[in-house]
Image (tube, rainbow, N blue to C red; front, side, top):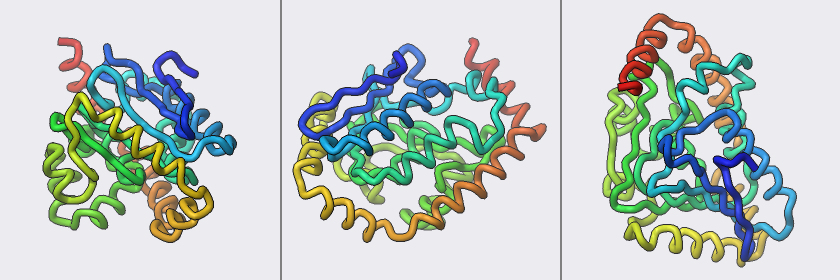
Length: 249
């Protein structure tokens, strides 16, 4: 595994930890590749019945490492971030997330693909794609309105407004708010409970609940093409320049 992505398997659960706290767990291409490999390994391992996604240092993730993201020379369809999102969305094993601190950009959008999400009271969610001159990813343009309605989705995706754990719980993105000192243990307990259940019954029930994956994957493709076009725009370049200048202060 990448040093910034650590994994631990026990009691039928593979825990994947984003471990770059000095950079607010900002995600690099190498980190995405490591998480893709971890999911692939979990899917192939009959001993693993559930995955747990978490961050280190008291926060989840601040989203993409912008400098690393902009340095990629891959075609948009091959960006590690977008390949990870697709892999995450089609994982056949249940996924639990433990969210404390910041969950920015992809740190929020991937939660719509999780089965159970638990948050600390200090969790803060934001999807600032438009502010960066970009468009949503992870099929967020489809899943967010479907989950919370067009009005709330407009606040989050157009205005880029942040929301807290209480709001996330109220609209059903988060299953429960758990004290920060108990969050990790609570999420792990729920992942273990899923892993202990009959595997085929869990897998089939997930498929029935989630329905056809094709619309989600299709929307990810549409978003990726729009994302790639937006990356080349003058407004995105201006937004990234301003962001990088601010981050150096």
